[in-house]
Length: 73
Image 1 (cartoon, rainbow, N blue to C red):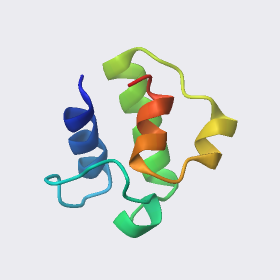
Image 2: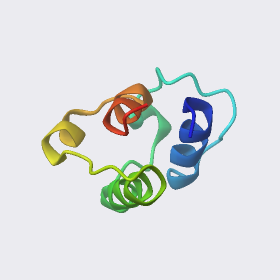
Image 3: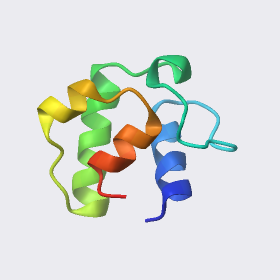
């Protein structure tokens, strides 16, 4: 999975527009970053990228690029 596909997958989780994402967008600005989105994100990274997300680092994530880093992209 490349970054644009990753950003599109996260946007789908957040139920927001999937085009034009650069990675610099904050999770707060995109909206819908709640406990259900966090669980969906962790599950997506585990199933699609075969990685385990560090809980403490996830709590510190602020942007899409932060999430991409956690996913190993």
